[in-house]
Amino acid sequence: DTGVSQNPRHKITKRGQNVTFRCDPISEHNRLYWYRQTLGQGPEFLTYFQNEAQLEKSRLLSDRFSAERPKGSFSTLEIQRTEQGDSAMYLCASSFGTGDQPQHFGDGTRLSIL
Amino acid sequence: GESVGLHLPTLSVQEGDNSIINCAYSNSASDYFIWYKQESGKGPQFIIDIRSNMDKRQGQRVTVLLNKTVKHLSLQIAATQPGDSAVYFCAEKGYKLSFGAGTTVTVRA
Image (cartoon, rainbow over the protein chains, first blue to last red):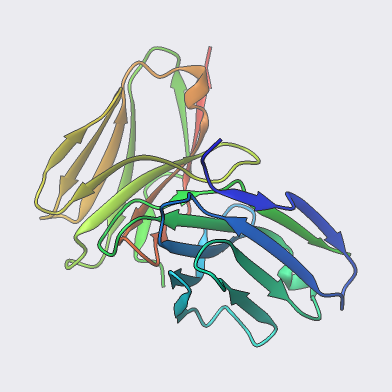
């Protein structure tokens, strides 16, 4: 399968714990995006990378959130000191090029905070 | 606020009929739109895109129409099948996609 891969698919953790998610984009895609989706809503943009550079961060991305893409390939999204409101589906997408191109999504990591 | 929005949150369609899902946008400068399909437990799946220099684009069983005058686009699905049951989103721009709330399509056998 050459699509976008996300791990883990599900994460259950207690409030206050740190969690890290991984995204492996489609191999030739230079852009990588993170979105958050809550029940009944469309995905909301969090941040994106072009190669290893993080070019934009949404105001939704509080100081507890950090994303990296150290070698311009896979990316990690870490949430520190998780809160109830962090419960959501975290989606990763990737695209090729620098212009308007369709983003291809992974199946997400569903985070549940106890 | 939301810059794209779908007209109806739900749509029930008889199998074999055509489906039409509508979406409105507010930014007249928007020049690129994408339709996604999201099945339960999965990420959004790219269906078709259209740029503002086009009025219509066709794919396999799907057609997207863009009316820039009224800032409206629609997704038409021909001969709707049970596998078309999903939530459909329209989104604008190529990066930092802005999604509407989605239309849930249910196909009746």
